Length: 262
Image (cartoon, rainbow, N blue to C red; front, top):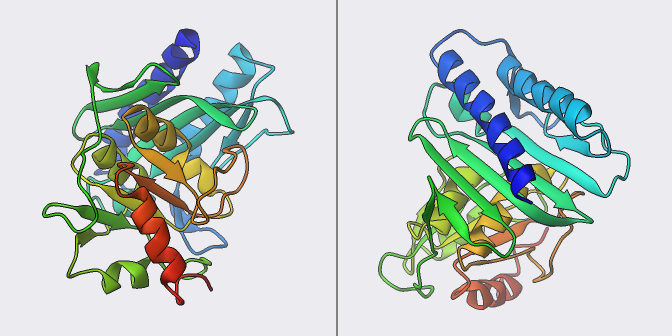
């Protein structure tokens, strides 16, 4: 898998330079059907990946947030060219590039790059998680411990009420919503945060495929909101991405929350 990781890092290097060079410049942008923003830089990075995969790995396909070539192939590159596009467009430096190689629905390689902090997170299944070459680990905080931080995403169209859940537990934990699930997940993987609640469904795999492997290789746990493992080459059923220690507790609290599932 080292060859695939090197390829992912090459694409990530290109994405990093594109994000940094265009960050303070005027961007062409529009809104997708789900009312989320998309810029010309998202599309440019995604298209670069499609071209590179087509040239180097013709038996692989691409599932991208903005462009895909997927037709049921076994090997799939799953990408979010800019996770946190709203922050990118607003010139708030909280957005990252995310790329994963998924084989038969399972993530085998993952890379997330934060251009602004010059941090490259990576993992190969079974070989640990790293930031700039240094091994990283999740923390060991229990839900309710001092310092436990939960990040959540919220979408009006989602079937899952992550914001409502977070607000109900403000007396127990610290809560944030930073605007990029992959960036939040890297904080989980490196022990800064303890959990992320992600309400993604259609195309949600593009947002968290790489993050899910990096968190798992850092010692954490990832399931959907029903406690199951989702394939990462198709849409998902939300996600709990945690330090593992608190995972079962969060699942239990979600099951007890009559308002969580629409």
